[in-house]
Image 1 (tube, rainbow, N blue to C red):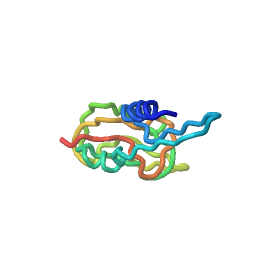
Image 2: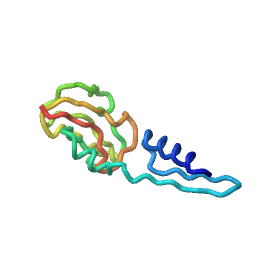
Image 3: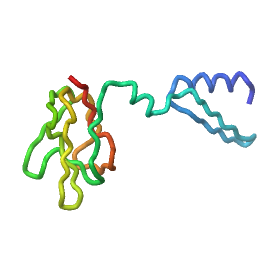
Image 4: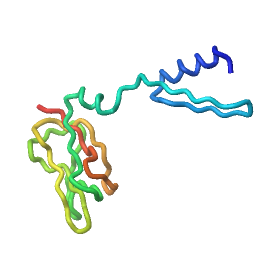
Length: 126
């Protein structure tokens, strides 16, 4: 592979969110890594959004069976507002807003499995 092709691939990678590319052919292989991406924890720390985290491992529900709880992006919430539940066996752990603000991002779907500490919502403080 010539240097011009390698430069084109590098330039293309910088325009994407890829950090590594490996290419194999009958003439050999190469691997290209870019180290200019910010670690995810630094990106999150540069925002004013506050995450509402899963309190345990389980299945996320917006509300208990037979009840409704409509949490949508842009919705105003108060500290302690019930955002949803995590069902762990027959127990339900409540997910609440840690402060007053607006729901900016809903990261979870009803009925999906979640991990302990997984961000479920991001709230912009008021």
